[in-house]
Length: 115
Image (cartoon, rainbow, N blue to C red; front, side):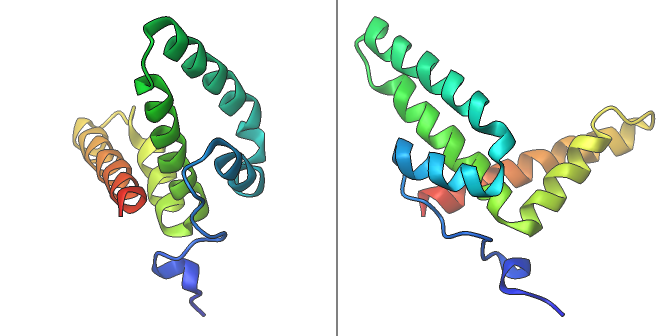
């Protein structure tokens, strides 16, 4: 039986693009990545101060919004995992297709968070 998640709806609602909302969503869909999120957040905020620009913070938000979009949607999660598993395949055609598919998944997730 298919679920709503099979058709582009997530396991959790798409979070707002704020650090707290993204962290809360990640805690549900991929809690093992919370230390990575905190580390990259600290780096982004340090760069923002150094560069006197919000660009690193915006980039951090979009990167995590995209990654959470993939993690919250079983359809994207499966495609992402399959593509990553085949990136270094011995058959060059399989590896190229995996790279194309990985790019397509990342693009689809980014478009979803920009919608």
